[in-house]
Length: 324
DNA sequence: AATAATCGCAACCGCGCTCAA
DNA sequence: TTTGAGCGCGGTTGCGATTAT
Image 1 (cartoon, rainbow, N blue to C red):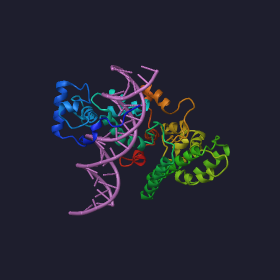
Image 2 (cartoon, rainbow, N blue to C red):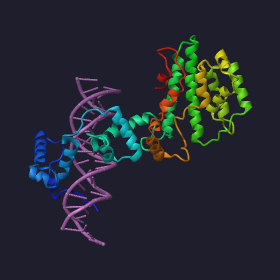
Image 3 (cartoon, helix red, strand yellow):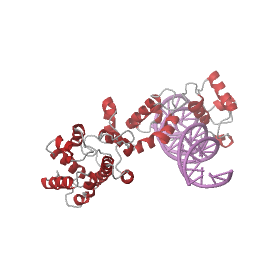
């Protein structure tokens, strides 16, 4: 049903920002008489405003229990959590955040949290990893950045060079890996042949991942393309022991057995997921996660990358810096 | 220093729900 | 059962403040 204008005399009503005098009149009236009927309130309070405007001013600004100031991290988390469960139900969300109005939460969501999630590669509507090509292009920005880093490092500094090479390679890897996902290309496990070629490449080129990365095209052009990240991980899986890695036969970027374990256990982190698990989709999935406090803290895409824990060369150089 | 672009927030708009007559 | 007043909600707009060029 509904109604359009909230009062017939609306055209004569004042609009726009409230003056301190109007605020005082409204507060004084409500403190004395309450606000049983918003429609009759402005007339009784001596305000040339429509009741709706009075209600909004009171509920969003003048109410004595309104909390002012920045949102705390805890409040942010709660908003994101609740939004993932119930969507844009701002008034419902506000009931869980004492002193915060639905309007304030809505504004905060639109101006801060939405962007924050997007920066993290999370779709603010579905709360799942983004699958669009924008995110892919942002990753190619990372590739460009890592390439620049590669150009900046002293060619004589072998360790730094390898780190930069690895950064560039990982970026390439992720782009290709996600392209294969986006295009629904099947990923059969790497054959022994592929592994042998990979092994040769690493040995011939002194274990430089940068050089290896430059050969990825050979794999991505063949039919039945193999997910490049799987090639790399299979290579490490295939290595006879961690000592082989540590002895310099493989990339110095992966030097500890702990690092190896991470590489073996997972492919490149799923910054972009082209598909969701059959039994866990979109908001329902998030609902499950939020019901479980541990799952609710599930890693963000960025955390996935941090989880690679590839180590740091020195205080001024870290993977976090590259990935940021 | 001037101008344009962007951001952040308060306020408005209009739809739909509830409930009393 | 129908009607419509009143209210609440979510989306949108307007504008001052801030930042970038």
